[in-house]
Amino acid sequence: MNGEMNQVIITGVVSKPVEKRQAGNSVVAKIPLVVEKEYKGRKIKCFIDVKCWAGLADAMYETLEEGSRILVSGELEQESWQDKATNKWNYKHVINAKHVTSLSPIVVREPEPAGGAAAVAVDAGPDGGYVDPATDIPF
Image (cartoon, rainbow, N blue to C red; front, side):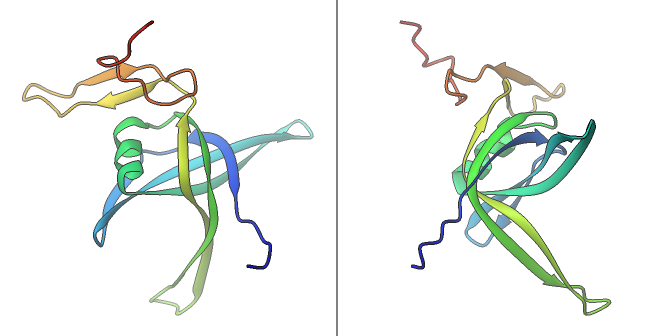
């Protein structure tokens, strides 16, 4: 090890619906994140994708929605791919998430009933994590 550290901690807003897909024997979710800052009176936006794997991917897909504010910690990665039409190589940075904390109320989607869609709103706990109202004891 060269003494280098690869750790990212960032907050932002989910800019589009979370996507989930099968990746080999695991599941991966992509969270499109937008981070805003103000510079000389102008808002500047930075867009970056956050990848979650396995159980974290399932949880983020089920609870996050567009507009959710989140805190992410993980590692920065560079993805590369070759465009088949032009043979040109493309690169982008993504965050490989180790932890994701919701800073907004969490919406847990229930399976869609025969009559239409349903959702149950659940508040985030004091540390921003999920609180199951069925098991949360108030004392």
